[in-house]
Length: 357
Image (cartoon, rainbow, N blue to C red; front, side, top):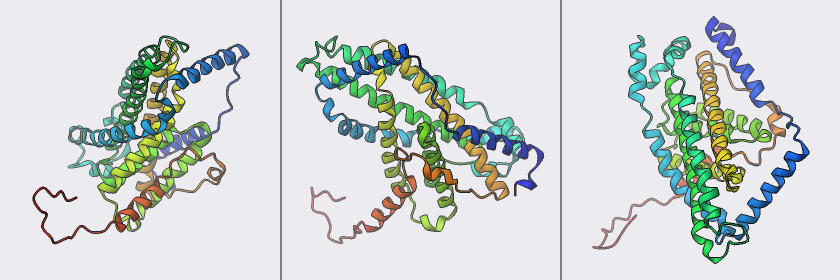
């Protein structure tokens, strides 16, 4: 238990508890001056009016979700595959760690892990800033302005602008989420967790859920992570968890995250201001995700090391959880679908030109 911790681990655990209290505290919105509120209202009206007149945007959600789903599946797999696991293991060996693979890292002292692990958050937030600025520029100047120059001038010829606008938002959401996915997996590798394993990919999704949650939903998002940890500990209930199931779950969850994220960032459609908003929003999001990953992997590492069980937070039941993705239920549903799929055991040989799946 926590009382048996080494002094170094005890200090780390206290820091995690302090972070958790601050991270999950519901903050009171800052007071905004009437002048600022009016400027935001005007900007919001411009965005809504501009979006309404672009051809094809009434079907924005269905088009966006379909496009993001395809990008998320491809990007998610690439994110996992490009984590430099061999380099992580090599870094520990240089410091005298007796490790052959990532899982061996979990036998090391946290103090050694802290000496080896680089500050990855800065690397990923730098990428997010540049990508967000580019998306903000494309969505504002390249999208809406190309659609007619002004709101009043947008008409039938605005379709290319609408397509560019929607494509930019899809690409931005996918790029940020894939970067966040890889950042979390990269951080997890330094704590000994291989995100290419199907169950570990679910934990990565849980961290992304907390990172993208609003103030009102972060308690529910943290509770979802605890549900995931408990479910993964009871492996017998998910003995049929495989890569096919997880790939479907990743696509669904990425799509939900991406659409929620994009609705929050529609302010990028305001010309000029969109560049700053795009860069700032991506930077804040990646910083939050990487910071959450650092603390949550440390928490999980110490819980497993000392047998500290997760405790359900009663206040999470009262939290606004409408936007929180219930990953555990999605996994259960996908496993059930997998079980109910009829086996493809037709002994009849396929005729020439007859495609069988």
